[in-house]
Length: 330
Length: 274
Picture 1 (tube, helix red, strand yellow):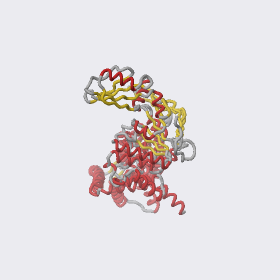
Picture 2: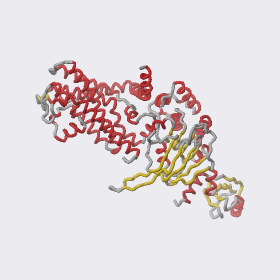
Picture 3: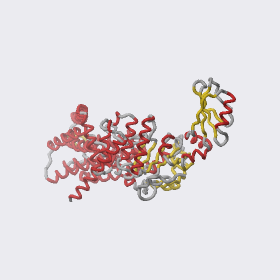
Picture 4: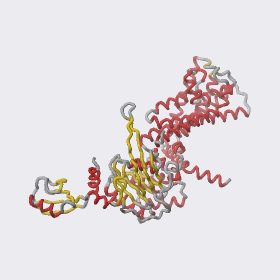
């Protein structure tokens, strides 16, 4: 398990301490019927100061509910939670000074104001000294490349520009812990790349603890040294990304280019046909390292068709997560 | 003393930053802002005309003649419009609740209610206050009032207390929204119905209205009862005329109810057994 982060600048205890955390919701059924749904179920985990953690799981696995309890928006049904050493609900206002949250779908910015004005207001909201405000704003504007649209009303920004603006808004008061809820959702490849690079740099410079929920495994593999996987409100895995792949058996993918188009290559031992391109000219087969080898799969394929070129893709993390769910009886 | 001033300024800074930017945003489109101001005046004048039309066919209603009713209207409308200017936008809470944007307020180190109240300011109500003040000035001129420092103090206290009572009713309605998300029409009926009721002599109300606006939301104390006390009128038999002096008490009561409703609403939102 990878547990220690390089940047442990933040003094004191862990950034997040959660024990037996449980959250139930009563859901309204027909008429007066109520059913109880457990969104977060007996969750216990610790995130050290300076760590960078990916919090992943399917829709409805309990990620957003956990974040709301970390931020003091929701009261736990059972268990305890401490964020930055504080009790989130009771000490919310104190916590707000040490915590930054980026909600992928909800804006912190004023839609009819330019970013520059939003930051001026947020600096006042966080009672930042004028000099600190100038320095921090300048730093974020430069690193997130906001300069070109700082005076444009937020409603006229592209999604990628707005998201960078949101991240700067959450980081303006230099929180020790930054929580990002689906920060790259809907962004194009280049915008994602920029945002990830910025987050890496911010963490290296200030030792900021990162917790991010995401559906994008690129975020996890680029940004996180530790993965928490939740499944139906329970912690299903806690460790490194490589370890996660090993646990479920990493599936590698053999990509073969054929001399002439052929029918889909089903029935190759220990391998599964994933897809075909060019009418069957290029085909992809997933295989399990533990059961067979790339060479064995290739020779089985070569018996049926003529292979001109090949490559091997390393384990696909989304595939890994899917298989964890499958193993869990979904 | 300088330290205290400095502390207050620092504490006020977050709210001032939001409010001043809202003011700039609202006044930046001069044309539409002017239209907003004008339409506000118009609505105020129409409501005033309604009373005038009513009194064309009757000399007195519930013991109040046109001059006295003008005074009731002036106090009620000035107080309500002022409350609306500063607090009225808390009725957008259902929109925040549906969009989940209330969560953003949780990330800022100020109390939620204070943030919500200072998140906006409805400047276009300024002209509406103007209509109310004009009615009030005319009302004070045409009535036979024995002026004294006490009367002036009474008027100032009544205006303040009435504004607070209306502001409290806005906040109470917002607190209830946490439970009723899609039923803002119901609370609007109480808040805006209360405003309308406040401009009428409470002596003509039926029993259900007396229960609602006499006690639960003490609208009778905002204008009608103070005017009865000020002019030394007989008033309704169920409400002795000295009750007009209790306007501040009505404000305190409304805010106690409002803060309780808000607190219960927030607890419900956070799911802490609300």
